[in-house]
Image 1: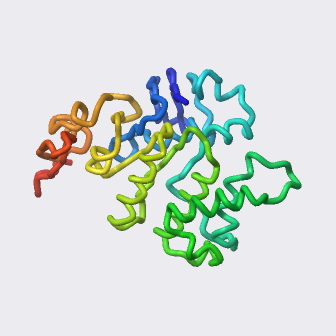
Image 2: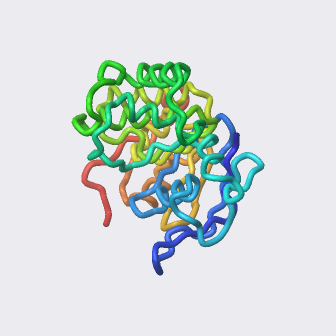
Length: 257
């Protein structure tokens, strides 16, 4: 299922943080959002997963206007791994992951055997099944991140929205989680700070700066020394990897404020 963003603008109070952004996220592809802090990446994602109401424009999930869908219907189409999540609720890992089945249940409906099997499969894939009986609040930040990804996968939606999916993870789990996400064949939109992770796993990259879209295309088209310097005010060299994807190497001591 494709996601189409058409002329989206958004603001917090009087501050405009997205300015007439239009972009289509193709079905079955992984698209990375890059840009410095404050560029509008998280805000764009929030407009797609309905935490923030845009001040203008439209979001389409497939052929459906997002605003015309109920929250239950949109949750059956799009799962989310947010950048921040509460850690003070005292639920087991298993119960947190099973929350991903909520969009498919009635108010009083319990967990079915199928729900449990879907949740256990997601926990197994994300490496958290051995801790399913542990309290979520007692886990490390990286463990909590993997549990929340398992919950998103348990939702079994065609689209997955990720805000810094490798946040808090060591390099082993960063690669494992991105391998898992990329192999799913879902429509994935992910805000990613690590340009090399973006280059390795994204089919397309969208670059935002000061709330505006300034570039989009394949990783090799977008991740150029000139664009990296424009976005981040750092010098970098970009080399082709063996698989043809770009690798970014930063120059030490060349950052410009």
